[in-house]
Amino acid sequence: MKQILSSLAIGALISLGSMASAADCYADYKAKQDNPLRLHYGVMQVSSCGKGKAKKEVAQRLRGSGWTLLNVMSVFGPEGLDKRKANAGKFYLRY
Image (cartoon, rainbow, N blue to C red; front, top):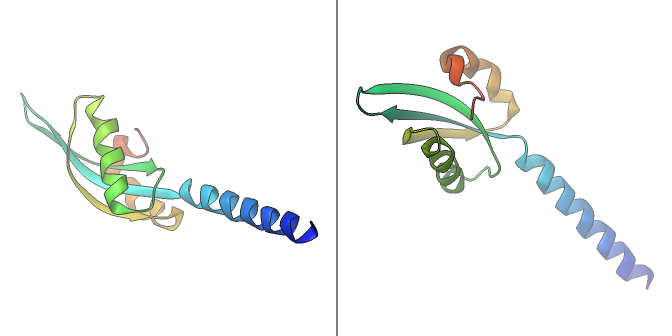
């Protein structure tokens, strides 16, 4: 019984750890709008640190505001936020 409880506790801690790390994932991307053509570079917090899943999430969130995703440049942790803030301008953590 004690061993089962320890296994459950360890499993819960691992789950919490992965949820916390997912909250610390960001993607920088390029997007466009047509008629008239507008381009922007932005940074967005994403739920997955995998580039493939992040690409789907970014595209879906941008689509809701009339933007089309061109490319996810990279997926990174909080250590990369400061160096991207100036370039992203008003699209820094906007979506």
